[in-house]
Amino acid sequence: MPEMMKAMVVHEHGPASVMKPTDFAKPKPGIKQALVKVRGCALNHLDVWIRTGIPGVTLPIILGCDVAGEVVELGEGVSHLAVGNRVLVDPGLSCTVCKECLSGNENLCRDYHILGAGADGGYAEYVAVPAENCFAIPPGLSFCEAAAIPLVFMTAWHMLVARAQVKLNETVLVVGGGSGVGTAAIQIAKLYRCRVIATVGSQDKASKVLELGADEVIIHTEESIADAVRRLTDKRGVDIVFEHVGPAVFGDCLASLAINGRLVTCGATTGPACEVVLTRLFMKHQTIYGSLMGTKRELVELLSFFRNGLLKPVVDTVLPLAHAVKAHEMLESRLHFGKIVLDPTI
Image (cartoon, rainbow, N blue to C red; front, side, top):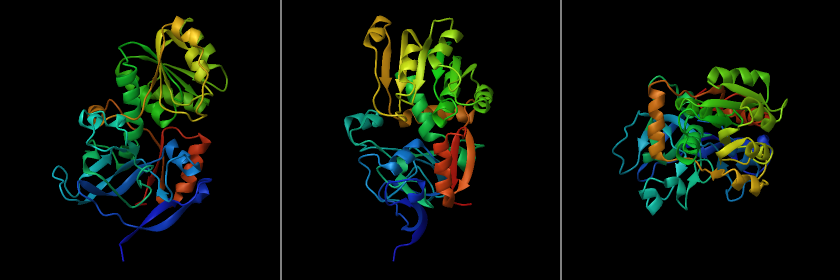
């Protein structure tokens, strides 16, 4: 009989209650893999989309993209890790041998997929992952804080630095500033001394994004984003819009861009289709970028800023693994600020 572990498993699509605590076979690390004892797994909206029926994901599956924990076993061919290492895991999985992977652009690999979507993830006591995806947790961070880093900070870094090519002292509009990826974007933009305008849905979140470094806040439930940007920028608009919501705000986001402005998007929380006014786009010399995750090279770069305290993870709540249903309900309520993290050890 295989050794068993506790996991929250999705056997069918539906509401949060479809996740069931299950005795699941404990994974064994394969060649060039590490077995990680999960000490923190942060939630993402991707978890909700998979649970409710995103195409291309085979059930049953253990959700969970963002893992931090302790290496407890190593497969053959691993030399750079040791049992006992405290690691966070890059959730991006790729073939490792194609031109894009070998050139350091693994997020462009045709076989690219995400831990907890294309492979069982971190809503469990243990997870087996490629050893090359394991990175040392910066000193001073707890496991749950470390779990709040990979997906959102890699995504935000790639969006702002690699795609939009943010420059010093630009004006950046961060949509959904209280979300995990939004809190990461605010901090990264401030590394470049940018003026940051963040949108939130409540006064409580407004005060929190200001504490995090935002210069101005738009409460989108009280004022149109485009109108507020015109007011705050003396009708000029912003240099960059950081967007991950989709059609609910996309028109306002485009209308908020300055001449030669760039909009970068990584999500479609409110739907997959948006209308673009082409005349405005080309008359104002604007650019729209799509962006998917980031690269290991970028993760190494951004982790250095956690080591010197210039970036910090934002954790709203830590819950036991058995409370994954409650955690999903919290995520869908959008009342949290930052990341919700599951800890299988409590």
